[in-house]
View 1 (spheres, helix red, strand yellow):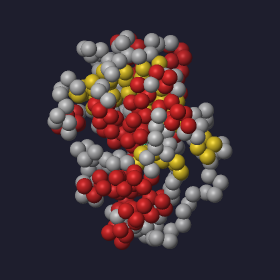
View 2 (cartoon, helix red, strand yellow):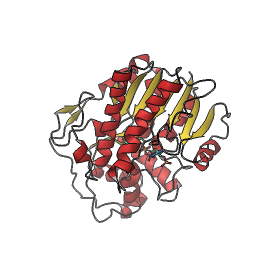
View 3 (spheres, protein in one colour):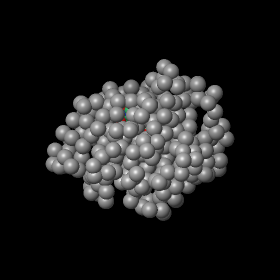
View 4 (cartoon, helix red, strand yellow):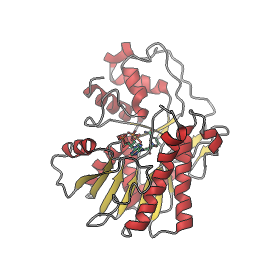
Length: 334
Ligand code: NDP
């Protein structure tokens, strides 16, 4: 047990991390960008005493010294979980919108912990499969050993910048530990597409998190005419990603490691077929039943054994994840 600072508390993944931290007995302080977002988190946990859950404001993770005050606490923090990073496809300025908040946000947390929070033993960073994937030359099996070879120049292409932001941010974190030799260690959680139930107090259908949009679009009939391309063919449930973050502070051997957390392959056709089976009333909204799957026959393999062996993850099935996601979306009016 101990006390945890969780950045980006208003996010899709972070909302589930909060629940697991509280269940496991951690005192939890989240950073949010506004009072309003902080208040909504507290209101969603009416039975949690305020010494167990509270918030501090960090308006912009990219600002110099953004975390200097947030990491100071009494009693002091034992762990930091850094999830805050932009994830959307509305790119205006690649550097300002993505690269700065991802990279400076990550190094800013690490610098602040080193300078002002000597009690912190570990910082867990939400990285991504984006920093593992080699889109130009997939290996036969992906493991934690792979790194996305993307360059700064390639990052200026708007379609690449999210993946680049995650790659450079994670590299900067490992470099920080190597060069600065702080008193804490780090671990990274590297999920691919994260599906799973949304928490109702944070999400409207318009503001839904990026990775669940394809399910919202299917059940609202937006993709009725044509099944959209899948993109990345691997996925994981948000509750397993959240548990991975908490296990990464609970399990001593997780220090110094990357964790590729994925439940397996999927395609958008699988999502549509599961919705068809579990919510037959939605049939008329779904992409055509005979749409072919776009998953390549020679799709790369994946090895998630480290997350199973070290963190003890037991991955949820796609059917369970999609059914629960649809249920949560219908509950907010989809
Ligand atoms: P969300 O968009 O729901 O959460 C992102 C969080 O980061 C929000 O709390 C957001 O605050 C905060 N944030 C973004 N930019 C800033 C900034 N400049 N200053 C302060 N806070 C900021 O997305 P997810 O929950 O899906 O993502 C969480 C993490 O997981 C990210 O690091 C993302 O890269 C990573 N990830 C997500 C995957 C997915 O499929 N969902 C896959 C792999 C990795 P606000 O709500 O106020 O905007």
